[in-house]
Length: 278
Figure 1 (tube, rainbow, N blue to C red):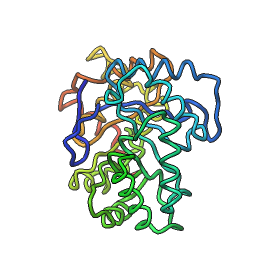
Figure 2 (cartoon, rainbow, N blue to C red):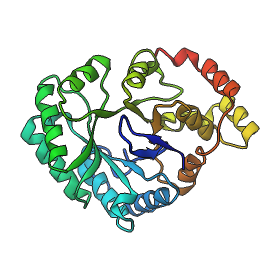
Figure 3 (cartoon, helix red, strand yellow):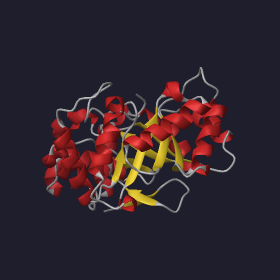
């Protein structure tokens, strides 16, 4: 498994992890596919995709419960758990409480990385970041991150941290959504903040792209694998595709440990250039 450094830390994480949005329900719990989800997550860990991204919003907390069940056969240090706090829970006490509840649902003692799911202009960001640092101090989380923050919001969040760094900004990024290349990606590269790309295969839409299929044939890879490999070829980017079917999961894992040629990376970038600025 190819690993990448997480932000400014000395920790390395898989360049492709696993997302869980809509795996166990959207904004409310859905128990229908719990067994399949647990099986998929366990298989993904075995394949080296041991970074798992979830959130208290996903399935109203049920996704965290499923992740907690999925990681049971593994030693805690064998997985890297990411979760996110809802924007309405960003007041100091609410955030501490939310983190404690997430940890309980995950059936663990701590989260490796905790993200603010999205900015909330109604709650002072300084208060939120102070609570995030308190969680580190309490050993409830190891690292602090953000999600869906633009450059200005990221700078503001950074300014309120006194002892810790922001190590991740999780945003939508794929060949079909490239607007972060305008300013956010260069800024995060400069600041050594890892970009965690969610929806990296555009909800499966890229699987149907004939151009990517043709390039894939040259490498004996699928369009999805080409799209993911293009993404993680960027030094500071990791991807978290979701897959509940084992064949899709293994397809995602097959995007690792091979490389597109520099010429093909440029060909792909050029072909999808009109998506660069959104």
